[in-house]
Image (tube, rainbow, N blue to C red; front, side, top):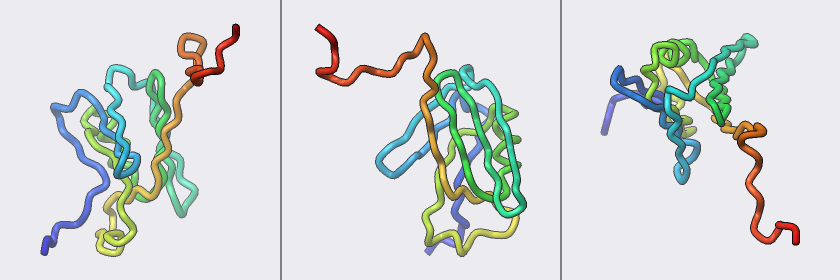
Length: 122
């Protein structure tokens, strides 16, 4: 049995992109050259880290997210994923915990929403 505590993020000085595991079935890789800004907000109980890229906005909700923000500032953040509920009880104090990750596609005039099949005019 592994005694290593579960991690919800990773850093790599050689990383060129951020891999986000949205769910076990879906992941997204966002290149650092599309990173625009980050914002960390704390309400006392919980923190929200917002990461903005050219075409996507990533909202991370959890605890002790400052280290993740710093890794992103250094362009070393290589992985984000939500911790499963079971291992959360073995997380050490002061370790980052991601409770939720929400990725939204940013709609711009250069990036209009995709048209669904069969919805074209005629």
